Length: 155
Image (cartoon, rainbow, N blue to C red; front, side, top):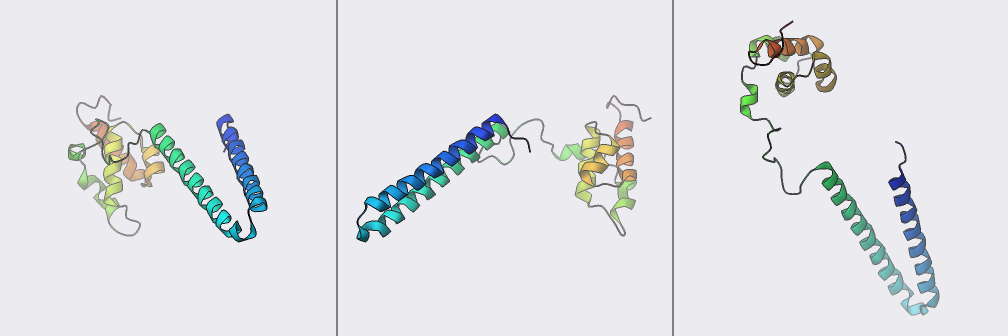
């Protein structure tokens, strides 16, 4: 994983925070009376835990914002999501041999392959990303290309 400028800056900031907290703890423990050292240590540990939780929450929030995921939404109402009509014309008889016997493929993977084949993915991609046998992926792609209105030739 390449180190980017922002990652280096984040690492430097984290190291500086750790050093500052460690120095602050040493100063507080050196200045505090002996009877209050346990309390001072506890307060410092709680402060460090709060800092770690806050930084973690900020990081998760930034990651969600950059990935486009909005908290509280499980299925956004966007056109790129597929509904039951995406399985229209599913070639069940064509892929049935791959769903039975030893080494059978799960139905949901074949159905996903069908949807993606209709969207233009080729057999090689389907086999690599969905773990489908190459023959099954080829059958799905050929059947999807044979559909009227796809704009693709069955060859």
